[in-house]
Image (cartoon, rainbow, N blue to C red):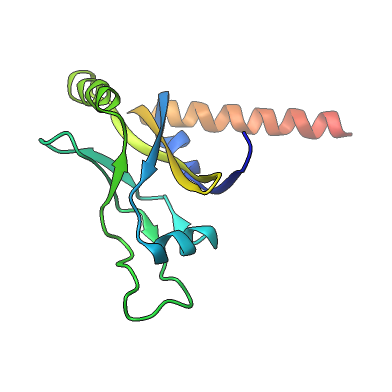
Length: 150
C-alpha cells in the first residue's frame, strides 16, 4: 500500500479476543482530531464499536488527545465518532454481532494516503484458560528466538 502509516495498534484486543475477520472503515473526524492523529496521539485500549437501530456504526471510548496548537474550538477527546462503511458491510457485521455473539473491536488506526482509517476486528472473547495458553505460546516463541540468536 502506498502512503500507509500506522498510528496506533490495539495490542490488548489480540489478547482479549479471538479475531476472526477484519474490516477497514473510514472515520468522520473534525480538523483538530485529524491533526492530533497525525501526531500519533490516539489510544485504542478501551475502544469498542456499536451499531445502533438506524444501522449507524460508532467508534466509542477511543481517546484522541487535544491538538497542541488548537484553540477554543478543539474537539472533545472521548466523543463517539461515526464510522464510514458500505450498507452491505454494516448489515453483514450487524448480523454476525447479534446472531453469533461476536464483538466489533478497533484494532489499528492508520493513515492511507490522506485519509484516516481504522481496522475493525470481529472477535469472540477468550476464556481465561485461552489467555493462559496464548501467554505460554508467546513465552515459548520468545525462548526459541533467544536460543536461535545464541
